[in-house]
Image 1: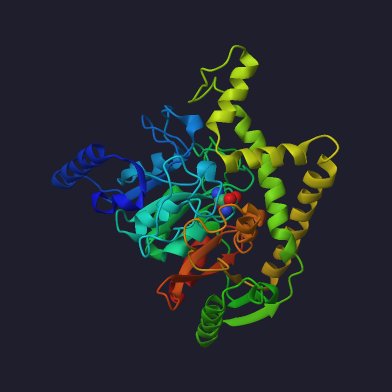
Image 2: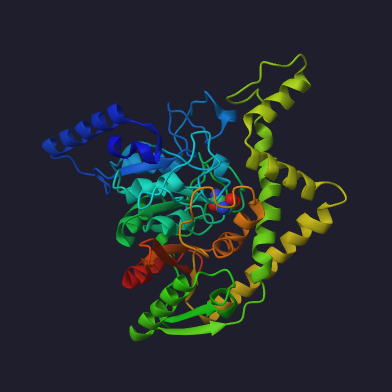
Length: 437
Ligand code: GLN
């Protein structure tokens, strides 16, 4: 970690705690105690997940000084299996962004080419694995924040099915989309960690009680892809040709890979941004200068204190989304935007369910381009939103998806491919992904 400080991966490093924990694990070995499933596994945690007694900021000024009073369920599970938490990673403020540029800690850089972005919002998480500062990184994925940075950094990223992993202790961005995800070097590492953090949690009412052993089994080996995605005008030709090679490879392995029409492509990003900004505007109303973190001292009245706290505490992108979300929820626009987007979400879900009744998996690109230069489109948020076109589908539908490395472009930058599966099919999805790697 000390050797990679210039990349700005970590916002907090638990050097003393981690060594103490390692010593405690050594004692277990000496005593012949039984060892946890993740014994000695070094894990980094995106700074949107609670770790008792440690600062938790979501890369926002508004949480300045806030210390988490409890452990997230995922942290409890990891610690119970003897993993070691090494520190908190940099990210976009409240998970809002695609380049790790909206952070009070400053940008995080891609270790392969520091003039490029590591992706976002879990940029620090992806680089923490890429630079070998840990074996596993926990991130969060509301619309691609685990898969897109994994793709930009040449590592593997899993977004589990909605409800598969407890969100207790995860700072909410858009609650009906958010899932904690896992970044690692290999599918089997991710699978081991997934096994430990997945499952019903009484502290998260949306967590599923479907057992891992009850996961859907596939036997037809049928994979679908959407023509409109592969022919997307913004898709980098080198990503497209790597995609074509991978589908051919799968056919050689005995899978049938078929192309389908998908009429909702242009609706994915708008639906995602209407619904997530609406949910975000509600979730972020709790940061008022009273309950958590930062409070503006420059106010004479209670009302001014609220206004000044939020004006000074939130960054530009977060404010933009709160305004957009408040607008789509406001009386007079609710039916036209929020309700309409909910209806479109249902149509998209029904269409994808239909596809996954006939096929086991859907294969799709992760990003339209490879890791872009830092600062690209910094003044053009809509262009950045549009780049989320391939990742938001899994969150709109609540399905599991994994991003895996799929070669390099001519500049040596990683290319990736994405696999999406039936609900709760994570284990099988990772097994299939492993065969492509
Ligand atoms: N880039 C997307 C956004 O800004 C995804 C973020 C995420 O998954 N947290 O909303």
